[in-house]
Each structure stands twice: as C-alpha cells, then as structure tokens.
Image 1: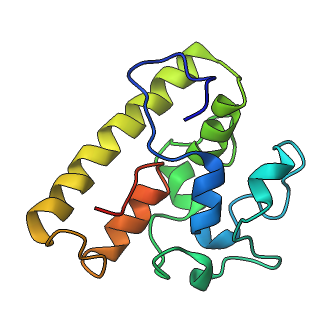
Image 2 (image 1 turned 30 degrees about the vertical axis):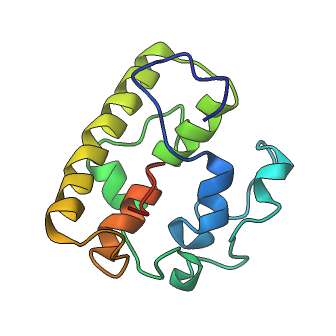
Length: 147
C-alpha cells in the first residue's frame, strides 16, 4: 500500500497498479480516461480499448453490480462518480476528504471479511477454481484473492 495511507484501519492488500495488472472490472473501469492517474499504473495493466471484456478479469468471470446498480444503491458520491475504485486511486494519490474517506473505508472493511470467510469455509487452501466470483470481487476491493 502507498505511503499516502494515514488511516491505520485501512490496509488494502493490493495497490491500484497490482489490481490493474491482475485484471479488474473487465478492463473498462475508467472507460479509457486515465489521464489523471500515474502512467506507471498502466504499464502492465489489462485495459480494454472498447468496453467491458470479461477475459481481461483475473478470473475471467464477471463479478459485481453494474454502475447503474451502484447509483441506485447510493454508493456513488459526487466526488467519485465512478465509484469505490476511483476513490481508492485518488486516496492512494494523496487526496483526502474525511467524510467520504470514512464512508469508503467503512465499505471496504465491511466487504472483505464476509467474502474471505465464505471462501475459507467452502474452499480448500489455494483452490482458485472455487468461488471465483467472490475472488474476483475481493480483487476489485484491493484484497488479495489468492489464498
């Protein structure tokens, strides 16, 4: 995790660079608009040039809800109209908005343990073919899905 993390309750296991290199969001999270982010994040990324491509995801499976569903659930903030991963990227780059940070860190903390617990309870050690949708989702929340 970046040295820009000053919240001890927030300890992601993966950086944006690692996530992008492993394959997240079908390679289409930013819809090609990556100018605000460090170029080195994208040197070994798996980005699509023309829309969501499930084969670019680490587990080659679609995982998660659509952006429209995120909006309907109230998970999109005006500060980060693309959602959690946009917030995370900006957080790593040093941006701080305490109220938004608190909400997003809380969402991150609530997400990982329940999915990690389900995988551990139902899959053998390093059985990466087990619960691939949950593993892909963990990856998209900066949790290491390889356990």
